[in-house]
Image 1 (spheres, one colour):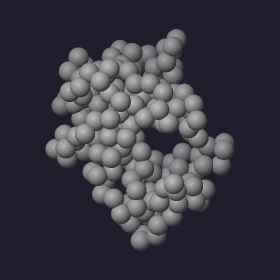
Image 2 (cartoon, one colour):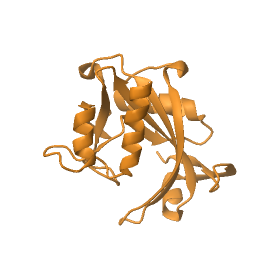
Image 3 (cartoon, one colour):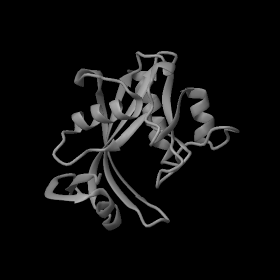
Amino acid sequence: MKELLDIWDASGKPTGQVLEKSIAHQKGLFHPTVHVWFYTSTPSVLLQKRGANKETFPNLWDVSVAGHVSSGESILDGALREIKEEIGLQLKLDDLLLIDVRKNINQFSNGIIDCEFQHVFLSELKTGVKDLVIQKEEVDDVRLFSFEEMEICMQQKHSEFKIVPADMSYYKFVIDKVLNH
């Protein structure tokens, strides 16, 4: 099934255009996405290991849940859908706290130009990690990472775990938001 996305302009306003995700990525057109960071009071954050078949950052550890907002879907509905699909949790709107909207552009050697407005949410993980039902087509594993482990990963010095090489200030921002929440 082809994913249809609403296209936005560079200031984050919908243009009214709807395109397949592959075309938006080929042309480098902006579109909305969601990032949901699950945390525990330990404190720790849930990361997912991206599937080996992913076009970008395969086999790297990433945000708890992330995905594209489908055409005609609200940002919150997209976040709730992605949570259900990727880790099997059925949440309510008030379980999500919007902490940022980030304009992000990534160009990849495979030709993908991913131009996103990432809607970043926090949500407390109230379920045990073993009770999560992961979407095997996209996610290979999930795991809680302590903030100390995250720091080692951010320095790219962890012997076992490699995170998506995003702007490391993004990870720091999320950790700070969890600590201040």
